Image (cartoon, rainbow, N blue to C red; front, side, top):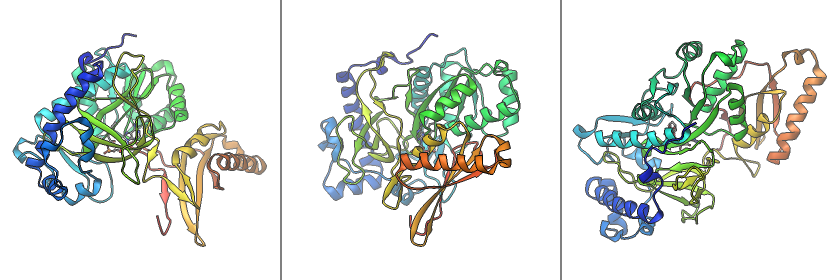
Length: 436
Ligand code: DLL
């Protein structure tokens, strides 16, 4: 398989060159924010900072942070840096409750977005010969359009199916011979499961590659999907507040997500003290987009936990890489004093053959104590007739969860096919605690 480096000049540049590009662009971005966004001018003035104080890349740490709350308070257009008539597109967070976070793009922003998407896609192994089924929603969510532009840019044939209608997705995948699938990992899992249920032979589909994003997944889940569909699955990451996907993506070697360093400065900070952490240490990812015209945020706190790696990759790219997101600072549950991440539970579930990869986590308060319940489907429907076997399985799951989480979880086994399936991002944690 031929592997294309879309923009060799940027993706393989040496550190000195990249630093020079970043510094020039950072100064511009800071000036732009100060001059055009009253929110930033006020923040700068409060701490006595002026754009000319930013002289080196390290000075980025003097800039104020931006949070999701800042975006909410300035909803919908308060943080735009261009007049509305220069904005050609709005996108926003995929949140289903409350107001979305709205951000905008100028024509140049869309062009810059397509460029970094083309890099992510090429790094994963996508080429002009591919037929690409985009099963991300097209809408305010940035996933559908982002991947769409990148695919068109590299010259692939795009099938903009959007999400949902799984039967039709499978039919078109067979009829058109789609070679790449774009979706959330949860949707790919659902799709693979449906195909298996329908007894569809892998040889009737031509899929070879998937680009997953929009949510995390464990390595165990990736391996399962890759095996079920007979494909290579890579992962890419981004968030609407910084323009959507395109910020980072894995190459075919799957050794961390390559970051578009000419368009973004990345930092890792301690989520409690907000102090920057050294390269390689785990903490909250903070991103400063460098070239965004319509919506130029500074030091955006993503809430996503990861770490960075500055070593060049065997694929030839020198770009800084981020590790797979470990979780969000806000999806860590503290159960009776113990930190629990949903991904730990997913790992246990994926490692057991007797249960399906679909699960739900329910957190409640009972008599002032937090309790966690894991609902999972058993695979073999005939177990229903054998109470002892079912109970044995339930105890094994409980035991495995306890050894990973360090706390006792209630395990409820349900019949195959009864837990919710997801067409977009999964919502697997239901938190019913009085305090959260
Ligand atoms: O999910 C942007 C995107 C679309 C990225 C398609 C990749 C592909 P939002 O809806 O604003 O934007 O949600 C952003 O989703 O802060 C992460 O918590 C999570 N997320 C996105 N990609 C990944 C990933 C898009 N690969 C939020 N791994 C982010 C883990 C991810 N979490």
